[in-house]
Image 1 (cartoon, rainbow, N blue to C red):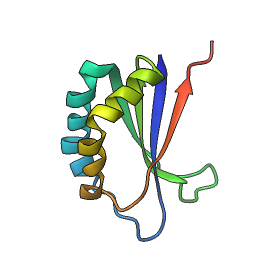
Image 2: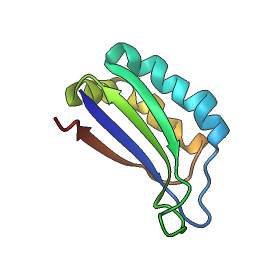
Image 3: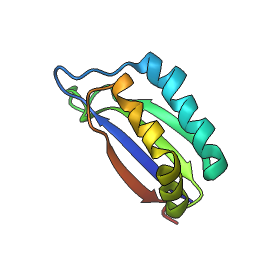
Length: 103
């Protein structure tokens, strides 16, 4: 099992349509990728750093996949549609990281 973190940077002048993201983009991700190894996902919204400053990431999607290979195959198959939807909700470039669970 892996956790894929998709992190959208914050910053002055960035646009992020949370309503579109939650109601359209993430359901699209779930519909396309659940049959391909996506177990579930959580969306978290960055609110502040410990000292009260703007967080480095305004939104993070945490996607739990069967394996890194399953994520790669899902992205290969449906990536054009899913990644092509990004301009509909943001003008930032997401950072993507694959994580393993520590045991």
